[in-house]
Length: 308
Ligand SMILES: Nc1ncnc2c1ncn2[C@@H]1O[C@H](COP(=O)(O)OP(=O)(O)OP(=O)(O)O)[C@@H](O)[C@H]1O
Image (tube, rainbow, N blue to C red; front, top):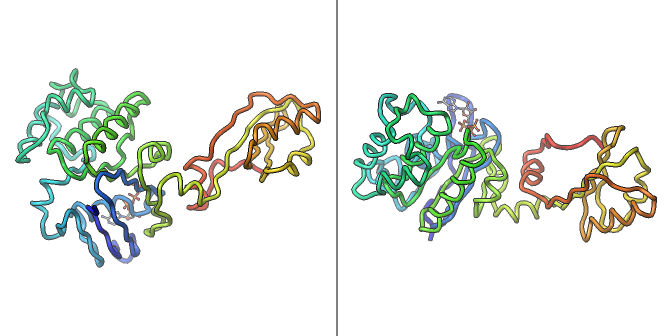
């Protein structure tokens, strides 16, 4: 069942086109990721979904409602993660959650939500005294306290420590399992790969790709890689011509690092070729293709690329 339908959305700020013909649909119970570089138009897109921004043209349908015309009804079914600075500093955590709970006819138990997000110790702390990560967790609690049917989480885990990030991922997965649809704007590709059922990559106001993380990786031709170091540089000719190997890149002169990408049993291929040359690889690692590869292939600047 489609819960969000966006069709041909366009938006300009003065004479700068920020959204250029954005269309997508989101199904009930999905975690739908929105990825893209800074300034790509991700926040503007989700602001059009929640009615905070009015598109210049195109249409948005959220659970059968038009966010421009039905904001009051939409607010009862849509939870939006607030950004820092949007809440009165003097409120305590528990007061903020209870206040937000009062905006909804039905909703979550504030105490359970606070504990589920690891904020029990901070329940009496004023918002101004929270750390960045604690505020972030409060913002998630406020987005969810009305038990929304759709939650829009923009930069969900920015500023969270690794443990809190993982706890938050589990929390979001449980939410999805209970039928909530989640729109997740993120810069963390690992987060998108782990959580999202489908991902839209927005670049310069257009959708550059929209697919499941696995299919994005496949379509971008992402391949597993084997990385190792050697004591000294070696002739890579045999490795380059081995079956299934598509690229070999080496960098450094002291214990140079070599990265081999390809298909088949790449680790066996690499170790066999090296053994035939009497080379013992050090610190060997095998990595599956990831969303990072697909993302950088799509937006065209691979910050991680090693020199050939
Ligand atoms: N109120 C505004 N007035 C003018 N320009 C704006 C306004 N809001 C956003 N922009 C511009 O629109 C473009 C898209 O912004 P948006 O916040 O949607 O990007 P984003 O993809 O969410 O970026 P980020 O990853 O940095 O959060 C940017 O170039 C931004 O400077």
